[in-house]
Image 1 (cartoon, helix red, strand yellow):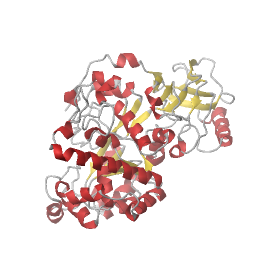
Image 2 (tube, helix red, strand yellow; image 1 turned 90 degrees about the vertical axis):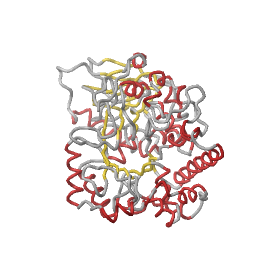
Image 3 (cartoon, one colour; image 1 turned 135 degrees about the vertical axis):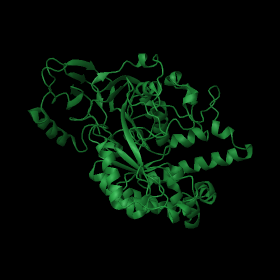
Length: 481
């Protein structure tokens, strides 16, 4: 959100509380305050369903945090503040990529250039301080705010993935983690500053209950890629998000096909076929959507993943301005730089390509139906898979969320305030007192056209303005081992 989830009357009450000094004032020895004046503060609260915009707003920033935000008639601007004139422009929170990567300095620059101020990198294996197979540039400068997540399996105390063996063999011969071991792992991760966990497909229902409860107690997000636990069960347990539509839509396949998929994803072709042929109006889809609507669980479909891999009528990722600093070697199965042709599709037999594309379109339709039934969404890219670009890939994800039915405001909320609402993140995702000062000043109106996020006038990151031109001129630096 931006400012409030209620009526303007409640906004006034909160502002009065703030302005009487409830949040305190920055030390006089710090840098001068910044005041952004005159812009329209766009309300993306309540999953983008509210519209309490503030047309003539003032945002006061001190020591990198927002200390006041609201109507110009109510917010007092400090006498020593540096003013940024935003009259005629539109203000939204900095964008959040809920499942990205930060492989080198070029990735960091591209994210910031495109207004992505926070990146969550999941599935980090913190063995002795290392990152396992996921390489992360932790000290990018400049760079977006970096949040780390780690995998949770039902069997490995360090989160190691057992995917090299059939799941039946895994179930029969490997020893499950106890509740105490699961809790201890979450507590270790929380103590190390991790912001969330990805619950893997070999986690059992009772283990999901333990993980979700302890993660919530420690303020960590829970994301699911499930197998041994059904998706309806995980939703009832209170999991925060379900990752990847090509995985969570398996919940809509017949039970026998689901079992084959859970044992070996490579052999689960019947589940894929069933989902690809499923009528969006069937009772199974309706039941799943209605459960999601009544829950706190959000879908993280990573629409850009399939749209890029399966060439679903999207622009060539290399056409984005920030792509000029990205090297193809740093992407996984990139698209052709000249034509935009999918590297993944090019590897398939010619007679399979249209079948794959048709199924990918159908998965978008299923997500669109789940949205109509009331599902909530989070924006994430899983870049650089299949050539998805850092930064501009999130713009694509937001555009695709709009394509499946979300309003422009709802699609932008999926990359901003929904993370505050669903994950409980108290520092990012909204423009309100007490949060970090990450925000975008746009020349175009994002309430009318989602492509307004392409028209960035100014990026404020941690209270400071970002030199976007310079970001496209800096060299790449690789992540360490």
